[in-house]
View (tube, rainbow, N blue to C red):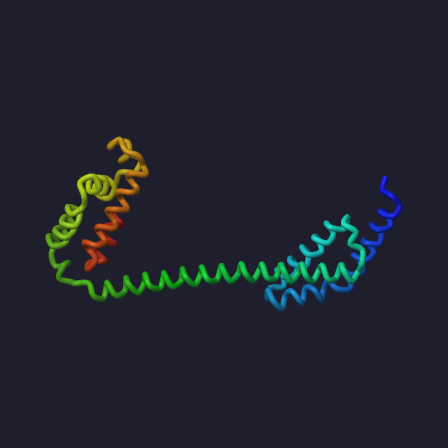
Length: 196
């Protein structure tokens, strides 16, 4: 059994809570929406703030003015958290869009500048690819050939050569890097080679 004063505090809290909820809920949603712009997000924020205050009712939070101040502080902080998160998300999206734009520009430029004479004979293409692959370190070359030219999976290569999959991945990374350097003037050819 709760002491009488605790029961009284609880009744008082519930009465004040209902009064504040009915009188201020819509206004608080409008307040939050000014900052977060989305009505749904604003409603979620206000709902969570009211949930917070309900959870602390045992702390003797019965004064209506204090409850109102608590709610606005909670809403303000939740709006700040939401906006901070949105800023981080937008920065990441912007960075990704810029990276994508640069990648597309590089591909566009390389296709525009690509020496068409390289494609004049099959032998020229073969020679370029063969020379680039031959420039790889021995183990790296072996793994690359098994992966890209023989179509083996990394797990199969690892098993056949008695090495870890991590080693296969590392060697493939080295191969890509070296081939990118060797064929830097022939990016379309490199992209073709890597798509095999």
